[in-house]
Length: 122
Image (cartoon, rainbow, N blue to C red):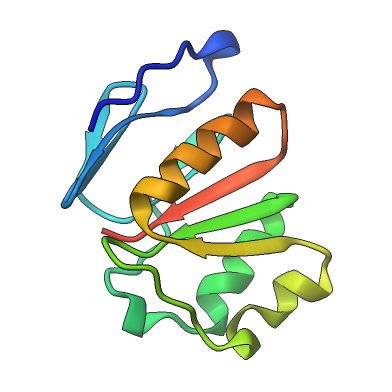
């Protein structure tokens, strides 16, 4: 599905998504990525939801988001709260949703100038 949004100030926004890819500012990605307004990061090495551990979540502490959106693929999945406790203890809201919903929500929050990070599992 194509998402048509202007991306003022050269912010990174999702421009399309499908079952095995997402596009950020027209660039196609077919592997898991982390996106925030200023960058697309490919150094979060998770390929499946079942692989997630505490270290995968502490990765986000240095990014200092207000909100972390985790796109879990075509289905919404919820990890055990102990895996992301460091984030909630730091006051970071953590939301789990399917990837299309994560992409849409991320774009809305960026447009509101919120400090949001989207981690997309592909």
